[in-house]
Amino acid sequence: MTEEIKKPVEDTKVETPKVEETPKVEEKQSITPPDELVLDPKDEKEISVKETGNKTLDQVGKLLQEKKIEGAQDIVNEYLDEGAFSLATQAKLIEELGESVVSMLVNNLDAVAAQEKESGDKERGRLMEYAAGVFEASDPEATWTAIQEFAKSPESGFSDSDLGALNDMLSQGGIAAEMAIDRVAKAYSSSEGYTQEADLVHGDVSTNSNFKPLSRSDYATAMREAVQKHGENSRQVEELRNRRTRSIGLGY
Image (tube, one colour):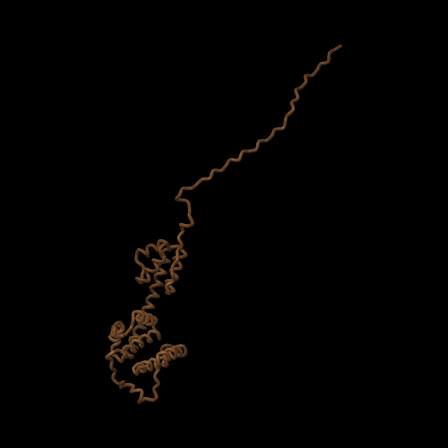
């Protein structure tokens, strides 16, 4: 009997399923930046600029505020006090805003300032002429100086508060300034030792029945209406001024 040739039995290995390991998640380390890089919202200063009443300067202040220019209020105050920016301020503004922008701002401010000065000088001259008419004087400059001296003297009876109010009215110009001059004239005519000769130009009110005196309040009302209807330089406005001047001379 022949022996069967047995094939070698192959080792059969049973593969057990592998359990996949959960990948390790590396923990991120929190990095704290250096102190100088940490931004604290509390350290951001708010830039604010108060309005001045000068439209052109207020526009500059608004621009400085929007651009967060440090010391913006001081820059505006400097122009208010000095009427111009110092060289140091101009250099700072050029660095922050650029030369062309600063040049435009300065030119606009200077143009407005020149216009306001011209208008102010014109109004000052008009008021001095008005005061000279009220006090029947020929030298407006000397009259204006005398009015200031009298208003500050004890004889006027004006308190510091009164003088402040008069100055506010004078600074407004127009009818308000005229009313301030009228008030000083009335105080002057009521002061001790004051004497007034007869008005030889217009005559006494008792001999001129066609003239109707105009009180201060009536004058203010009539002047407002005349300016609105006819304009500040109209004949009607000039007649009202002359009428008020004459009325003051008569004690009204």
